[in-house]
Length: 156
Image (cartoon, rainbow, N blue to C red; front, side, top):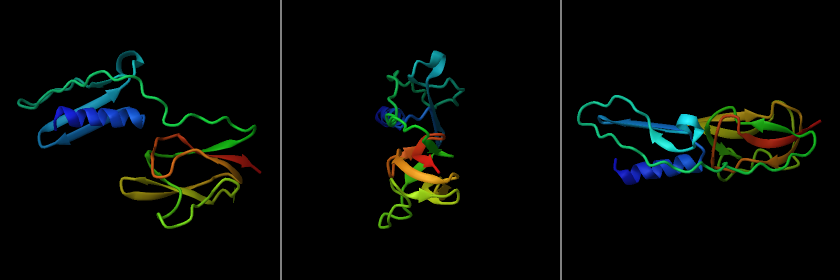
């Protein structure tokens, strides 16, 4: 792994609001954390004991990452369906299939609204509330974080 690869990882962390990254491969270990020492928002390598011969790489401080998506104004009384895990968000079961839900779709507590892929496992996410979808907040095929809003729903 060279400096170019580490800079690419830092850029990915910044773009996807990832706060920690660790990679260990063939005697090489790199661990990057954002927001160390007072929440400065920079990326830095955690000081960890390194075996002899393993390069120690310092990542340059990075500016604070922008939010993954700007929050849209909520309608009065709308609830949010939030991501229960970190993973990749999918609106449909396959690229050729229609989305599970769209704006205006009525859902019940057991209605599957999307899939989140985590570690090669497809996890069906249910609405857990009865209502009407008012907004799809997350972007199809993009990474989502734990607790990130996926949908806004008007409970009925």
